Length: 159
Image 1 (cartoon, one colour):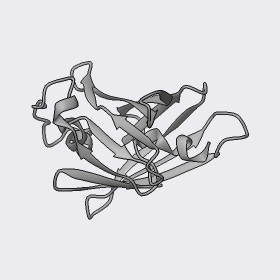
Image 2 (cartoon, one colour):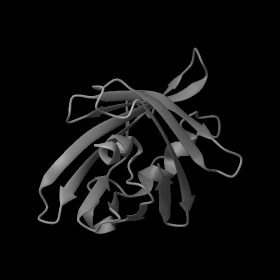
Image 3 (cartoon, one colour):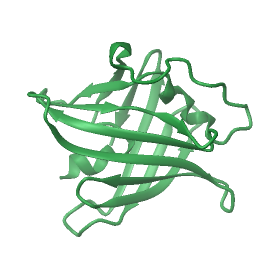
Image 4 (tube, helix red, strand yellow):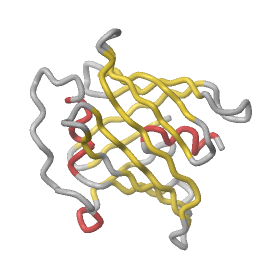
């Protein structure tokens, strides 16, 4: 279950996500985010729906990022499918700004009944660092850490 627990930011270990415009369910043109918008580092995720193939080639993870509540929050549902297209795991992340701590935060809820909360920090090179604490059962990873980096029309995530 470690691999799936790490999917809170939308990637399997070492996966690259590429846009899939044909599968896009919403508008391809995202609203402009103001420079002082604390969620601005997440704006590139909203450009497309994203699909990554797991390293074993037997599973795919489909991600969608959509603004909610006047762009105060970002919603990220995802589904992992097997080779037959059957959903074998799914979850959803909500990103928002915590004004009290001045931190970009996220909350992930999954099909196992587990949930994770954490923070997002932007590194000087543009890499996004996601760290969180898992509030699921003891059989799952207690803490998670992942990075995402955009390069052109795709992003790479390591967990």
